[in-house]
Length: 306
Image (cartoon, rainbow, N blue to C red):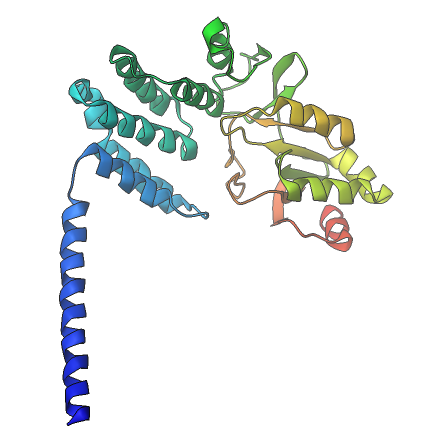
């Protein structure tokens, strides 16, 4: 009798769990069709909620934005939004820019900001996010213009911008950082010998460790001094002081900012979102391999001598 009662209890519990799962599935199905701006934002965030964002996820998120956010922005439907709804709309543009730094999304952010101003609910963080969006999309002049307003002195200081307008728009370029200047120049992989392109970040502990390791070895330091360049993709911050510190500590490891993020024309294998540092080893403009952090001296020597 005890076993029979126990079996009935287990059966009852399983029935309850099954019904609960069906109920949750129903709720999730309903939520996926919820077109409120809060849910739209949550769905965008969910797509990006992964440390390893691949191309398919990026494209999926962009299409979701086009289907759900762009119509709201273009129709000016959000004019009648409440403050919290405008906040969700703003955050939807912000997270999209973080993974897809394109000017069209910054334009959307500006439109939302205008109505935050109209409703007198704009905060310092909104303007700081706008400046970061300008930096992420390499609109350095606009980012610099913002700090001319004395009321915005809490924003990032941007040095004077020297943009090279003679460079083709689709040509890889870099920005060299100085104490008082941000200078754009053309960049290309040398085609007459070995070269190492290091996708790095001056604030990344792994990048710093790699640099320390290289400069501690005289032979490796000489190789990287002659045949390498260290590049960082700005994602909203310039880290001027960190770059200046890098130049002081590692003068033989030249570093700068990417203008057009990889993949670059002719180099589809290059990516800027795979983790730092990433070492790309070239021979006559061909890309034989790339290696991540944790490299040993023999690996570096072998790759650069291919």
